Image (cartoon, rainbow, N blue to C red; front, side, top):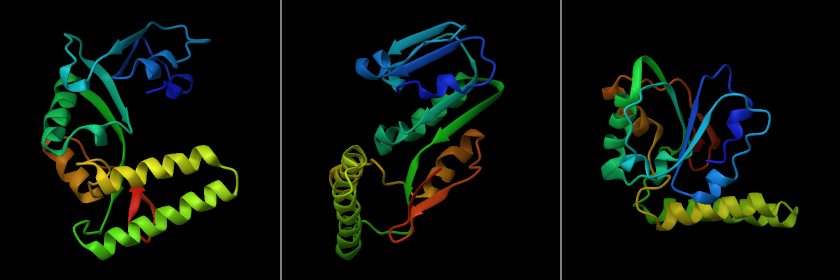
Length: 178
């Protein structure tokens, strides 16, 4: 990601930032940072290291991993953590909506089109574009933004992780974040 969390993270000895995008890695600001930062250009599943970590933070990235590889990714997170390590997962979920049902898909599309129109009408173009990207992924991508809160919980539980909280932000379609 873009490293925005770097500025607010508590005491750190060292930080490894991993992303498949050079642009995201280049956008990481190291201003006023006194600890070593390693920027790694790699897909998480291809990333190789002998290090173990105290904390692994994944914000809005696991949904990009195809469904059939998500368990492998969570397993890899568990293997990279020290014994008492902590995994912070920040993700979106789509709850209680059967996406195979045409009516539900039309409802999702209608809600997002209204959100997008409202953003553009109010001059909040960047937010409207983000909502458009989310809608596009919901409608056309295989696996992105499609896990429910329960599915995320069931995915992480066998690896010793628990879901601490989740909040629905669009109740009409059950869209929210962990």
